Amino acid sequence: MYKLTGNAVIGQSGGPTCAINASLAGVIKSLSECDEIGKIYGMRNGIEGFLKEQLIDLSAVFSGDDAEEKLKLLSHTPASALGSCRKKLPKPADDPSFYENLIALFKKYDVRYFFYIGGNDSMDTVAKLSEYTELNDYDIRVIGVPKTIDNDLCGTDHTPGFGSSAKYIATTVQEIIRDCAVYTVPAVTIVEIMGRDAGWLTVSSGLGRLVSGFAPDYIYLPERAFSLDSFLEDVKSALERHPNVVIAVSEGLRDKNGVYVGEGTQSGVADVFGHKYLSGTGKALELFVKEKIGCKVRSVELNISQRCASHVASATDITESFNVGAAAASCAVEGANACMMSIERDDSAEYAVKFVPKDISGIANAVRTVPDEFINEAGNNVTDAALEYILPLIKGEVDLKWKCGLPEIFVFN
Image 1 (tube, helix red, strand yellow):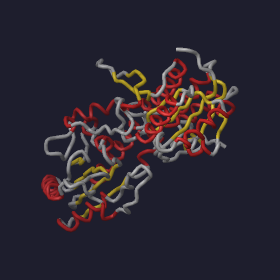
Image 2: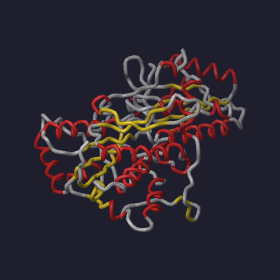
Image 3: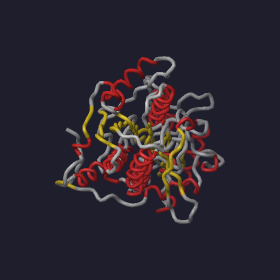
Image 4: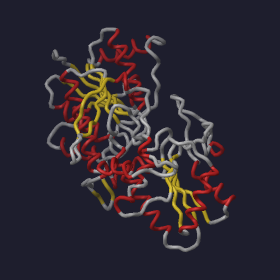
């Protein structure tokens, strides 16, 4: 592949994670070692910020003797350090002027490398931008770097950010189970976990089954139609076995007609991609159990702590997140374009991965759900195979830098 010289720009988009900045650090580190790259720019608030020319000179920020220390601190900082956005790009054929303005900015800043770190909707941006630049002969390499705690991106074994969220969820649920076990009064605790269309995060609530023997009595995923009648029978059955019942549910549970379980407690508001803002599934089920059984019942919504709990991040996740970003940068310089850098798991007995570029056209706007073999026949729990798939992703602890009892973080001025 011919040598392409110019500047690079990096953006972060969609929901943040505690590993997304590790990928950013990986891209920066790798690009800074390439002779083909001039300046490295960061977009504030993703593509929205770029259109407003709100850029950070990352080359200047991460220069000098303390560059490595800064990159390490950035890698261990939760949320999107550059800021994020949820902007849906128009189809190139529908609004060519939008892309003409974008290309004009690329030319102004001599941008020849574009990296977008994000999930499904961000890969949609990568796909549309790749399509336009290829058809209109602007020489640029557009690369997607995967990120999402939901683990629902196609074309990759798992996504950066998922392992740390899974570790937090498994840890928190195990602690909740132990807390609930101290009383003999019959009680039901329902833990609501993120996941609109895919239940990967909720699956992780059961990891304690393999490690400590403590796991929820039932685990319900959006991959199966949810029945209130069956749920009620499950709760009654669990209460007959022991007084302290703990149940994990995905926020995206729907009945056979596609109606969200928590729809009565939700606003109905949707984002620009048409995704409804979900919450209230746990509360709806709490009220249902209270009405039908009358025992002590409560719901716990883990909410955004699932994606920003860097204090219990997975070392495996942070390392892979950094490496997938670095691989994206090196592959782009070597000629990769219109692709997402994916993670492939080796078939060897020992857990190992490699990073390979995948065509973005087969990834954007697709959802990878939990497969059938990972869900039990009754649809109210997960198999050991599901937990064994996730377990390597949560291993290892991150060596954080602490100050006065709190972990230090990196913030762009």
